[in-house]
Image (cartoon, rainbow, N blue to C red):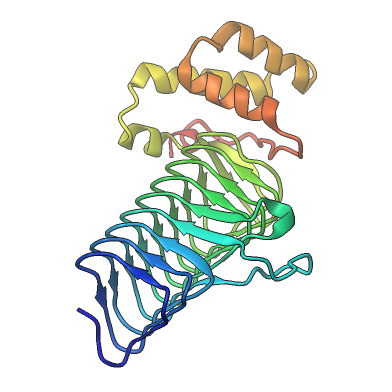
Length: 267
């Protein structure tokens, strides 16, 4: 299962039934889980752990040092979950000492050609990053987030669960759970209703989230007052509570909404 041209340094831990193709290189502090497949020309370095059944395509490089002036050469980590599909030319860096020391990627992610996960970022489960999407350092991404191609996310930004980031968008501020963000300097343009439907949310649940969204971003009064009003009126709903808790936990700016047509909010 290991091609003769592969180079695996002493100390690397390789699980059961792992396939390692031509010209792969694996460093001494790397752990590869059971049933993983490294197709060819894969570089795994640093203190890196790859979860079971993950497939890594040619010219991906995982675990290289963080692209940060603050990094001091310490044994920081990259942890990638199980069942991920990591395509060609994907890069993921280890963390920095000052940023917690770990870059974390969840289970079931699909990382398309040329996408990048920067140092100290934490990416949830079943995240899709289309071609050439870039996460700066310290980015937080919730479960089931979808990024279109060519998205750039500024460092320290949070992307909430179930959000959709439209291709070629620049994300400079936090995006609420289930939000849809679009634009070179992105704004919210509605909700990811298609994504909510695909994950099995009932029509009534989606209607409550939409009502909360409209009250939050287009209601009367200052935003803080709107937030408290929505929390009082809709906070018992589990999905709305995720939006409220996300906003309250934020320490940085929030991506705000612009009004579009009713049909747009369904897409």
